[in-house]
Image (tube, rainbow, N blue to C red; front, side, top):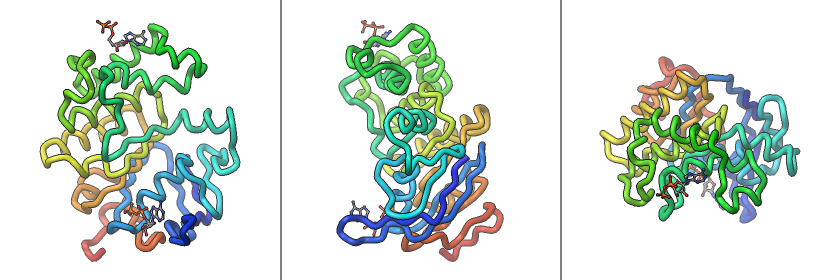
Length: 237
Ligand code: ADP
Ligand code: ADP
């Protein structure tokens, strides 16, 4: 489903974010990427959706190179990839519903979405998505009226409305308290299991990785230093 072939990313200032990464992630996996601050977790995730270009190697999504893709082909590949960020990245002054509908943007012409006219099927899909993360009663609330945990669940609903096959979550719980962390991680795990969504989560804490992931990838200085099932992950990193 996702394959990285000898991927390196050097930033314009010369910093090496990723250094020769080879990885294969299969459909339906729940992968935790762990490592200290600066290890390259965020660079890795951003590369998979081509939020930035890599400087060496190739990344294949379902067999298609996102590295080579441009225009319509790139948009089509990206439609399958949902992103979740530490800071939620919602439009704060918009309604929850509208934020979830943003997941549908890739399915329509730019002009149509500019005017915010989504078909009824999209609105139905958005409500189903909100229902799945148990937040449907907040559909008409303004996004910034919600708690952090609720906002992150809206971001998950947006990915569901997008009908993404892959979810990339960059430290999704880093700004949340323990209880809310559990709710958000439970939601991610549930959509992974129920909808077979391939899930890759950057996590700062190995404990969470152990509790939720089926596979742990450890990064250090832009290189993979551990890759295996949770049972083999020790505390020594
Ligand atoms: P992590 O997500 O594990 O904290 P990052 O992927 O953010 O790590 O960073 C990996 C390395 O790349 C670090 O050395 C970091 O300082 C560097 N880096 C990240 N973003 C940039 C950038 N925009 N410009 C230059 N260096 C960067
Ligand atoms: P109200 O008009 O009372 O706010 P609506 O149900 O019309 O209630 O809309 C609530 C939010 O959802 C608004 O931000 C609205 O623009 C958005 N919304 C509702 N239906 C659609 C739709 N079909 N396409 C795009 N946005 C919609």
